Image (cartoon, rainbow, N blue to C red; front, side, top):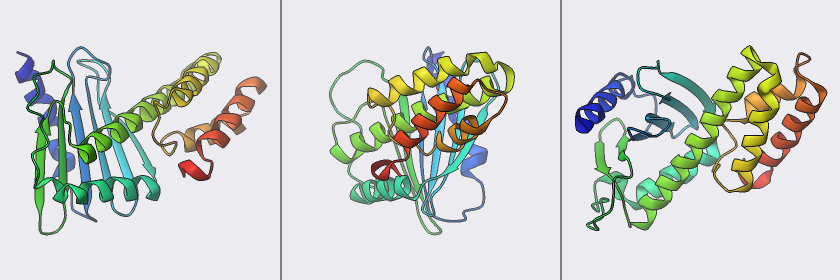
Length: 213
């Protein structure tokens, strides 16, 4: 039953993967029934355009977040090329470990398509890519929650901002790019409390300093 669920969520990614190829792209997906989100997909194009798609809980609709980060694209493509764009080596570890989420890495350009699936890896470049994408997912999920609270529950914004701060301090966020536009909006939104606007502005400065742009 679990593998049927995995097949379903991977199928959900197909329409995006079949979109017109505007520039080379790296795609990462993870399906992890029982976790939140249960599925997410990140598509990074060489030109810096990034698309995040998530299913937070079973039965819920897909949510989307788009942003731009040339820094993130540079990191992702450099690591992908170290792995020969996922043509080799084999990423999956031979170690026996528990289920850590079914993951997929794919590279596409006008002439090539390579992809590998894995549960756990000890290959350094692949492990680093996984870490980056997990951090992008954390930032994107935080951004989606903040966007939702701003729209539907302004009093809940401070709680989400606190969570973003904790995720940042604990190095759970690998890129501030998914959050920057939403924090920028929150920092100037007259409908939010002054303390929320100040906190959003402070987080924005932290996440978009020279090291994280």
